Length: 197
Image 1 (spheres, rainbow, N blue to C red):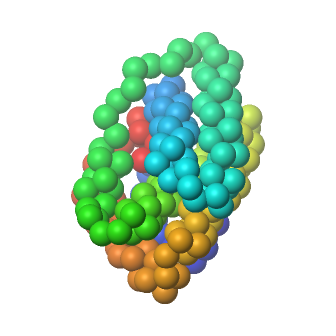
Image 2 (tube, helix red, strand yellow):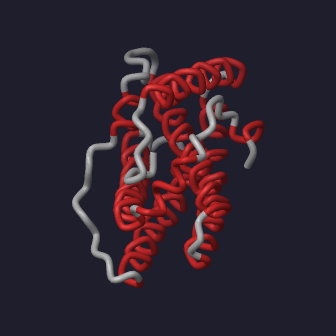
């Protein structure tokens, strides 16, 4: 899960874990909604690109996994006598959405959606890795290790689907652009310990 695997150009500020640990209820709430949005995003792609058999086949189990993660995050909240708070604005995803190229062929639009999802999974995976390695709560550490592995798989799925439906070399060039844009976003975002991203 090191940088060369995920390709992220800018690692998370190591202070984030310490701040997150002090706001674990906020982090778990934000995480729950991230899982819900990930499931919804995959459902949306399945509906929009229902004719892409490989996509439907590959993303259907991802929907199930993301929704299962949502339930498991709720369980972690309940174990700590915490309740699910209100959904909050996701500045990270809002900024990424602005990076999506408009227009182009249907396949190009699909590639943009897949690469944005791959980007979110890569950053989530990196953050889960930090929580696994650094957090003092042993149960949450084990939980985040499991989710780190799962998100890495989803990240690879999105990239492989993009290369399935479009020229792999062009996808790779565009992915490098996404990595650079994401690094710029991370530089500008305020360090917050109550958000997963």
